[in-house]
Image (cartoon, rainbow, N blue to C red; front, top):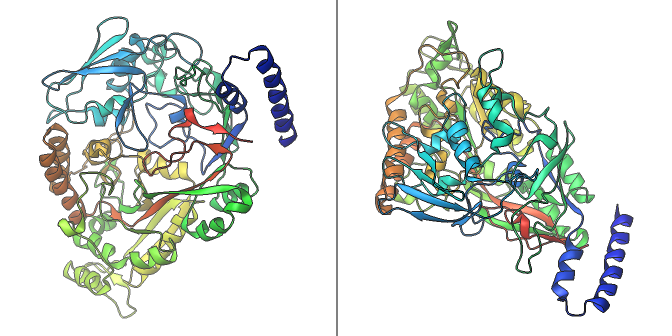
Length: 590
């Protein structure tokens, strides 16, 4: 590969020399751009994609941002809303209607025109379609009734979105991916043998990559299970630089499936990967090797991702069988039990030993970068390590200890449960091992079980049969309503008390706690309130309820760090956008 790159480089410069003689008036910058349009970058993912369909996906996919775009986007440095497929917009005086004007000449990655009809189809037939399960619908709901926006075509380039009530995140939510009508419309109308929309099976991981059509800077050309996803530059992408050159400059992206963080480290150090998320355990080693291996470690402050453990609070039954053993369900649904677990976990030790001190204890579902974040000094409850307080709470809730120091409930049942996380993530595996040890000091037996990521997601989203899990949410951003699908009681990621998704077997006996309904209401109110001070107060109350009742027991918020090969030029790193948020501008220097 290196020989080919050198030959390619030599050929480019030879041709450039001839062109300088023939076209002496051309600018040198144009030749630099042409020479940079080459090669590939290789990144990694710990697991295979579960789907290539962004509408029904419940995970943060490593490829969606390169394949699809929305009407607007978020600047990865500032968090400001910027034009994307829409070149401009106008907001009505009442704030309840936005008219978007699409860019002229937009095309899909198969060369077909991208029009207002695609935008209307995407909203009406996909995101707003009750027969299609999508988490995007949760963040589009407005008010007590959860009404959804209406969308209408004005003319060939303009489309109007309107909501029935004031909605603060209205504009930002227009960043949902737009999808091609000419490819997907038939699948929405047709039904499979079980009576479900055939769209639910579209763009699965068994699809022909050439059939997956988007509007982003890249398009997919190959997917090999447990190996890699290969993307190539979309020749129909709309962006051009100041000299009129088409972007992106980098021809190919490869997402390597590397199911172990250790293996990813080895591949990065052998130059098989061009980027590596830097975990604290690797930081010292990589920092010493920056010059020798010609890469830079970028640090962007605390991550916007969360890490937590969560108990299954669902009291529902499926076909008469409870999702959770009723004995354990009583423990999990006791607030004092969850609070005792929080006090029993030594997060400072976890930060020092597992994260090498690179980060801080996490206390809120809203990231510290958000203007709506409530700090502990402003009243947010925290759970510093306090085993005595943990025991006091357990005893007060009717638990006892036997002569062997084992924790028993009021009926004499030993407190024992299973904690799951995704295998291959060494940090989470180490966190789980410490949690098991910490809770053993409280007399609890924790069966810690790392399993395949896709198996874990299936249990959280489909079977709903789990006891406790260690995971995190990523990419919520600074707008709290982006996490409405977590906090609305019927949200698609309300995992601690999940209702079935469309097409799944129903539940009997699912209950919603008062505090749970209150958080739901606060997220409704926060989205409808336009006054910023009032929004901060509303989301502050929501954060206090979360920390009081602990549907998620938050753990550590590490620093956002990524090691990037110095051959990649133009990186503008932040915790919000990462290293590749401006992929269209990046160039390779061989």
